[in-house]
Length: 452
Image 1 (cartoon, rainbow, N blue to C red):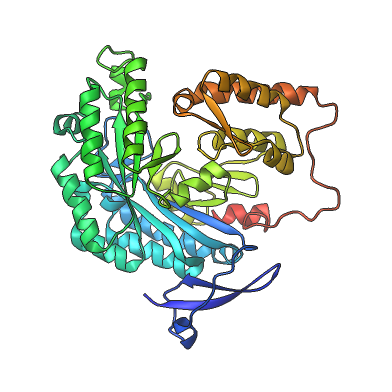
Image 2: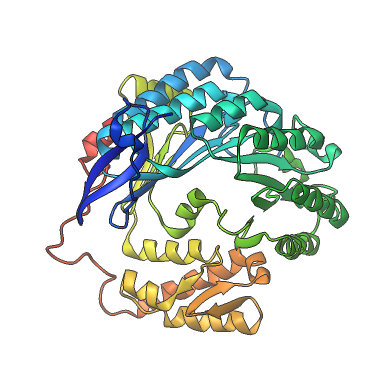
């Protein structure tokens, strides 16, 4: 890999910024360049890989098994999609890249590396960018991991799910826990120093002792990050037959498992920073924080979503329609909406309350020019029940509050709506005469749709 130094021009003057590129080697690449990015626009890039070896029983994400023959066209479409975005990407510094799925590792290290290289060539991927790939233990080798690390991938999210082999089999997983342990060792041998493992609790017939064993064995892998997701039974998944089944842990049992994870992981040095996510200091997922803290991100691939300058875009969740659309200049946008100020304020509340960073009255007013008196009253009520707490002017949920977060956030949003109805003037409008913010999507709607 060659690191070239490019000089970008921001509104505040000239900035020297290092980013990754596989272009020609020049003398400037050897120099030490100070990163000054305070005034530059940051962008996360999400790339959806919807291919799997088989469909897991709980999975509700857009992914397909047995469609390997579509991989070649899909790869061509992804590469072209990246190239077409080159002019718009020029205005952003890419500080996170995330390959999700599906199973990116099943797609193949070679294809993932090619897409990442195309992104480096056509966009400003910062040298210190967090570059993540989701991998399943059964679909990745040490050699592939080493190749990915050399290409610039520096973070892995490993789908472990459980330490119980019988449970893994019932979920449709193609690996046992020993294979998961080997995948983590292989990743370390390949050079990865930032590894996350995914776990699921609330599984059919799962008891606290089984969950405690999974937590213990996951911690023994010494990952930098652990995600603990409560099982959600969704229509269309194989596990839907268990909906309302007595074989599922009840609410109290799931709550006990969740609070056990919070307490145990804390004692092992994994700080909770979001409802389901725990990390050692400085190892929080920078990409996922973009979603929760309102950052901008670009989604590429079937079923991917983007959020740019207050507008959301969703790509059609269909591999063949996506590939055909990109390769034959057809639109692949399925949804497009511009969020109102009221909706953006609601997302601020909803997303940030999922994190330990929480919300701030001052911050809310500075962004949206609106008070949150009714919301504060509700938060104080939560505080008396042990569901919320205040630190340095910021409100956040306690672990017990996180457990009830869907309900509590719903009540906060209801208070926001009630407060809005009391405001005599219209909800915030853009300042008259203010120049509109230009983004990659603001070049013109026709142009934007054509690029997709």
